[in-house]
Length: 327
Image (cartoon, rainbow, N blue to C red; front, top):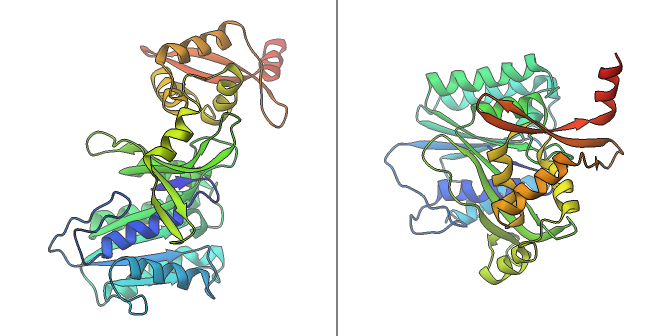
């Protein structure tokens, strides 16, 4: 699963991964991804729900094909696609099933299915019943057939790393690999042009290190960022982690409670400062009951509690706590 906020180039990263999969050369570098060649017959299916079919989707498909080494006007035999944009949401899951069944009539090899965007395949991504119907279908295909899903999901606009809706939460729980793409921030928490891709989860081995990309207007695609540019952006936050910056970041990353070790690791990764600096900031906020006010005016304070042998941090709504005590 690739997750990220709107406009964070999720689909462009997926296009590059698709080109890598289809690539006719194992020596080609796709922003750090390389193709492992195996003898298994496979077909890549791209299911799109967002782009218009007049120019946006055709251009994206041409780029996938062209980058993979094929002529951009010649569709590879093991590449197929479908647009769901003109299909009402209530019918999309059934159309997806029919599409896959249609492909299976002439193809019994490995299917690699891209769902861009997965939450658009059901009418209500906050409905547990609808969400589980889609996830159960995907799990059934994975277990009974030779199928791999590559999914894109939006993040909630106001939350740091939470995928959208009940479906987003469940697909993250089921995913074997979870990646996050987003813009690095300035000291004032504004977006820069530097894009970071971070591995949030992998079931196979140690999580790889994050890597950085930038959008090239010349190539109309993502390319690897230069080391000088990376240093210029990331060093500007080094050793800062000022209290207001930490408060702002906590509103993003503490949408749900987190273990202290996880939270500290994320803040160190974000600010590029020492562990002691982060622990000092968190301790100050906690001990002094410092107000952390969100954009909608809600007043929070940093709390912690024991979760077994571990310590867990969370944001508490002050007014709500007072109401509970008075009742």
